[in-house]
Amino acid sequence: MTQSSALARSLTVIAAAIAALVFLVPVASATEPAEGYEQFAGCPTPEENPEITGCIRSDVTGGYLQTGSKTVPIENPLTISGGLNAELEGFDYNSNGGLSKVKQKVPGGVVGLTGLTWLLEFFGSDALTLYAETELAGTPTNFNFNTVTLPIKVHLTNPLGIIGGSCYIGSNSNPIVLNLTTGTTEPPPPNEPITGVEPEFEFDELEIFHLNNGTYVDNAFSAPGASGCVLKLFGFLPISLNGFVNEQAGLPSPAGYNSTVEDFNLELVPSELVYP
Image 1: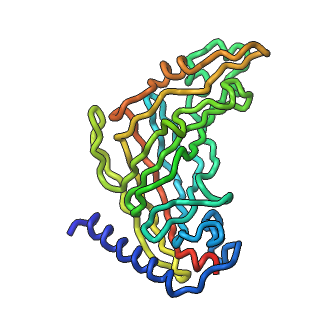
Image 2 (image 1 turned 180 degrees about the vertical axis):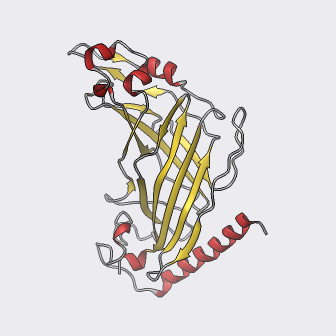
Image 3 (image 1 turned 135 degrees about the vertical axis):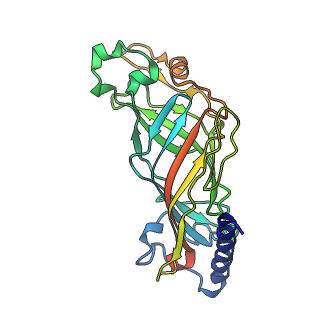
């Protein structure tokens, strides 16, 4: 049996054990996580969603997202948290959960994104800093610990609002769909297969299941063009920047030309232990 098969089989047994534990613990009534489980505050309570049987939290600690010709390093950790049903689906979260709002600095700034070098004459490079913030664009699915499907959109912002407040790569109706895996990808050319890292797993004394030091990868996804990007200067009417962004960033970008690597740690626990 391969290492991947062994891990998948072990995790299936663990998931079944967690599901079985649901019927052995009294129905929860608390509205705040119990002591030691505070990191699962994004998991819905039984009152918020009675279908939730497991609380999950995953921290992305490093890596990158490359769409078209632009690569954004993941330098600031981000977190996705919420809850799952007994089939490890039906992801849901409350006001404390979802995908954390974390800004990543985009190399090249606004000028690198748009190609409008004359902006430097008015503002200077510091004022043209650009940030990317990844947001959910749908419901994550396909949780089985060595894979997850994540629909996202990337919000591009500048502290001065030079590119407007609604500049996005991807949208709820046309998301970037990441099929993340710790295994080996099968991308169309010219990308070649890349392989993630299966995490180390263990239980702790609080019955929290940990997956540590794993790496998700995907280089078989496509990336749509920009939308909502506008140049706002000196009170003049906004000028669309979508075409500039698409040309400079190589968007829209078909499958085989994009890539992501995401280092992660993950925790899972029965919701009845979080809300006793």
